[in-house]
Length: 538
Image (tube, rainbow, N blue to C red; front, side, top):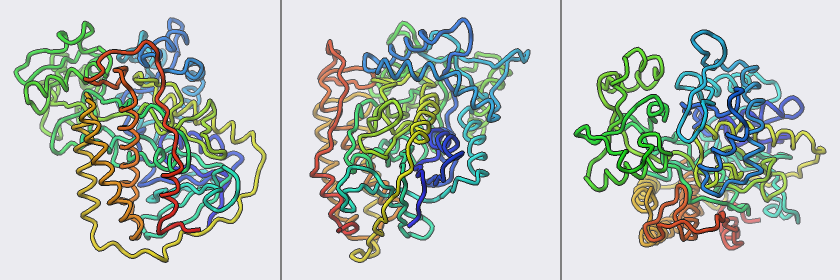
């Protein structure tokens, strides 16, 4: 067993921010499933939304966020995040993040994205996330008080109840070392889930392979409430190419004049919305989905080639290079694109300091549901949320008295054997992603949702049996989590009898007068079922 003051699961912007903010006084362990930079933060192109100029205002940023969130944003949380924007960006600048400056060096260049009333997105060319991630990851690696465990996946949280102590708190986690196949016990006074999103539950996603909803599944099994899981943001424009897995084409391409066309070059957005290409993402994604299904086409096209070549090169160097590698010259040709699962607006319910329902357990970043995004996230508010809640949770942790963590039981492998074949995992994973795409995608119906739930339950029983009898692997842990998250998405979608924000149902096309979040309460049945199998008989 290892012991730390603070255990952080996940190495994206939220986890790194919190690690650096608490490591001044605490001994920290940061667990990363692959390597530290395999996070969605590292892939984020757009930037960080923050009020940085005199002509912009906190009120305007709040207003834009509330409009996008379609009545479901928590007004208090939205104000809190908007008000802390400038200070978190200044912290990043002080840490050395190389944001893009104006040509005359008079200050930082700000860009504008769909849904924003002002230019307020600070960015580093079209690879902001990478610049931020790289800067902070280097600081974390050098820090004497932070141990980084790469190639490790958290399997389950250790709650006091699981170890026979009558209290509700979280005491740490079981963590699988993917290089040795051994499970270690890590005890901590504070455990933070910063595990990112759930995109890999879908066939097409802009997320990295690690986005399997691990934190949401672990928190649910441990007894936390989960909210608003039906609101999955599909990014309208993901590069469609057999060799280009999950390469996103930033919204800024449309912001700088890019147009969407059918294969024959006809524009179609003006028919769907007066704002055409600059309509909010959910409207653009639904329009593309509609045109693809109606015409039976595999993709649509995004064209920026009418802009001068040097303009395209200077604004979108990353996209230009990636497309050139695949033989597409974006200064002359349109880019083939499809919508893809991009961001999960729901997640583990938290308060203003990132605290979950379980004492000692925090959730920050995409895995959390803070109330900021409501029914639809505004562009570039996600990195901002990671920063603000990373800092808020750090302050909360630093304000608390030190407490002892009791000795925790080892992971029990005495009743399991090595799996004879992995094909069941691969097969179930592929099946899940395909039916989630078809039945729980951009447009939903009661019938599609019922079909999906039925299949999830069949797969879950198979996987549960497998999990109970065999030694665990990274893929098995991920599949178990994905099935749990898929069920939460479907059940949330079934509970919403209206269309709002990112949730669009053909059976309930209208919006109800009152906006109510979807909150799922964990039933004891599942947590019992899950703790009573091969690995954890106490």
